[in-house]
Structures are given as structure tokens and as C-alpha cells.
Amino acid sequence: MAKNGNEIMTEKTGVELICAIDVEPEPIHWLWNNWLAAGKFHILAGAPGTGKTTIGLSLAATITLGGQWPDGTQCEPGNVLIWSGEDDPKDTLLPRLLAHGADRNRVYFVSDVFEHNKPRAFDPSRDMPRLYEKAAQIGEVRLIIIDPVVNVISGDSHKNGEVRRDLQPLVELGGKLNAVVLGISHFNKGTLARDPLERVTGSVAFGALARVVLATAKISDENGNPKRILVRAKSNNGPDGGGYYYQIEQIELANYEGLFSSKVIWGDQVEGSSQELLTDINDLGTVGDCSALSEAIDFLRILLAEGAVTRKEIDDRAKELGIRSITLRRAKAFLKVETIHEGYGKGSVWKWSLPSSKLLKLVKDDHLLKPSLNRTCQNNAFTK
Image 1 (cartoon, one colour):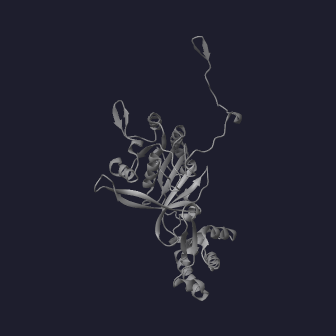
Image 2: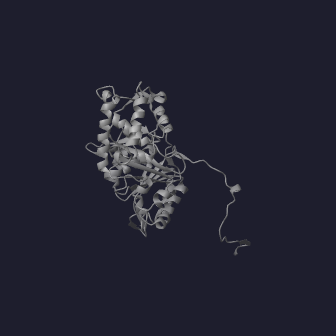
Image 3: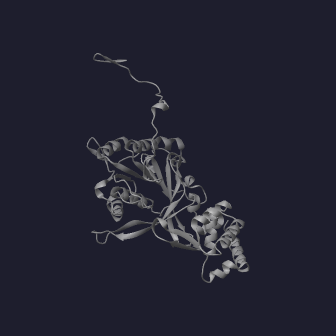
């Protein structure tokens, strides 16, 4: 015990236990419903060239503006902190933010740390407490981007214990500020067919510690068109799976003649597991077997024989028959099934329809379709 004037102060030692009766349950505060959770650590990972940093900056711009998310819902406005160990704010980060219309007054780049009036580079592995002090002064910080997140690790990024230890200050920073922490990472090479969480560079602790893991990829869509896709690979606090197509375009910045930068253009929402959605339709032959593909083809031919059917009904019936979403995509691509959008707004629906041109005869006639399917299976066998 220590004396303070006339009072006797007792020093606390030992483990503190909190009884559940003294804790009140709270809902998750979603900045973007089921995608970005306030106060939680997130990972955004993908192969090089998929635009991970640009996506992060697109999300940041939406937050500064209080704009709309890809699903059309409104965002709560706030400030954004960005630390990048790879890109320069002047020629890369700021132009991309401006391309998305960001409010510059709400964006803060983490720069140098001063010690005894001497600057040094910010070190995410040891400067999180100082960053918290500044962020608390700014207030209303909704998003913190760390790019790349592996730079937070001072030791071996492939060792579970060291990764968890070094990420903990970053996790606590987000919790104290009630901000989304978004760490950007890469996929390991040669991991195409594996679970997306296993593909994140470094220790599995990166994906395990993150409450939400987002992943990006370049793929071909169901019609064979090249596209990029953002998927929700994991969520401890909400649903996983599903995603959005997107493209990255180069645009000239307003008021900056001759200065071009990247901008994300969001596309349609898609359903399915993350592993299925991240698999390129051109590589699907190495994933499934031909008997399952044949079954899915027959299923679509019969179901669509009398005309277009809504995507929801197709998915529901396929699920009842045990046809995987990835196999259904293969069958759709094989049959050249057409996608039709009917209606507007909330009442609009997506439908699938058999091709109406010269391909229709191939689709309907077994003696024409089966040899084509056999050739597809034989070609896929050589790629396995």
C-alpha cells in the first residue's frame, strides 16, 4: 500500500476477472454492412495487379464523402489515416483518391516520427501508440489503411506467435478508435486451388486474427469476359461469400490537365463461396470432373428449355440437386447461356436463357452436344 496525504491507496496486482453480469451486449457497428466492421482488423489480399491499393483508396474516398457503397447503401462520413510503405502520396495515393472524388480535408497520410527534433520514418511495428495519440486529436477516424500489413511485423512474418504479437497493437488501435483497420497483403504464388485464407502471404495468423478477410482476383466471368472481382473470404461477425465485379480505369483528373490516375468502377453483385468466385472460368477444368459437368449441363438444358428462368430459381433448384455453384458456372459457360436483366430498381431480376442463335441447335441436340463435351473433358484431362 502507498500513502497519498491522509489516504491509503492500494496498488492493483494480479489478474482481473470480469463477471458476465457486469457486461452489456453490443451489436457490431458496420461501416459497410457485413463488409467493414468498426473497431475490427481486416485483411485485403490478392494477386499483384488486381488493384488492392486502389480498392482501399476507393473505400477511403467513400468514407470521406459519406458516399454510397457498391450495394447502394449510405456511408457514415469520417476521417481516414493512410500509411504506405510502397507508394508515394504525391504521385500515387493522392491522385487515386482524387480520381474517386475524395474530400482531401478528411485524409491524413502517416509521415515521419520526430524524436528530439529529428525526424525518422514511421515504423508500424513500434509507433502505434504515437499514432493513436495523433488520431485521437483528429477525431472521427473511421478507417486506417496499412499497406503492406506485413511491414507491421518486426520479426519473422511466417511465425504464428511473432505475427500475433506484432499485430496486436494494430488491432488495439482500431478498437480504441472504433475504426476499421485495413491491412493490405498479397497472395502466395502457386496457391490457385487452395482456400483464400491459406493463400495470404505469411503466417496463417494474418487471416486468423482478422475478423474480415477480403480477396481480389482477375477472372473471366460466366460469359468469358475478363473481369476483376472482390469477394468476402471470411467474416467472424457476419456472412461470408459473395462479392462484386469491378474494373479499374485510367481517368484524367479534373483541374490537373495531363495527370491520369486509377479509379475503381464497381459492377454487379455476385453470389457464391469465395473459393468458387475466385476461380477463373478458364481454369475450371482442373477443379471438377466431367460427370458433374454433364449433370449440370443436362440440368440447365431441361430447366431453360421453355424459356428464361430467374437466377434465384436456378440457384435454389441446383442446390436441391447438390450441383455446386462452380459447376453450374462451367455449364453456363459451356452452353453459352445468356444473362438477361429485367426491370429496374429493387424489383429488377436477373434471368438465364438458352442461346437464341445458331448455338441453339448444338444445345438441344444430344448427338451434337456430347462430342463437344467429350472434347472439353479430354482437353481438361491434359491440364490436370
